[in-house]
Image (cartoon, rainbow, N blue to C red):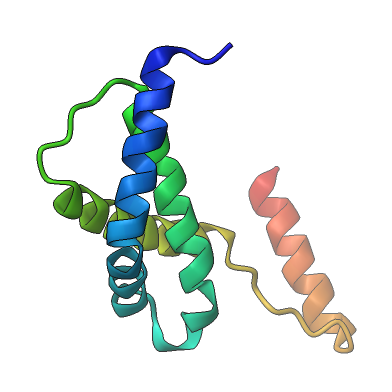
Length: 111
């Protein structure tokens, strides 16, 4: 069952979305790398989810534009930080000698 505070937060978020959605997308678009323009919508949506959770925790917001801009920039930074961790290394499996040597070194390092 929804709490009364949830209804207030939902109405506040809806008002902010109407007013600030273009700004959030613009901040994300300015912050992402040129080759990642296809991520703008997804990252902007993540910002709205984060703000929704922030409001549900009962946080007061004096300057919604500032909060949204900060969350938008931080979401992009977090995306790139996690992408660095997830980055895969390319291996040419056609060249068996170097692939086997690389695999053996990885196994040796892990053991």
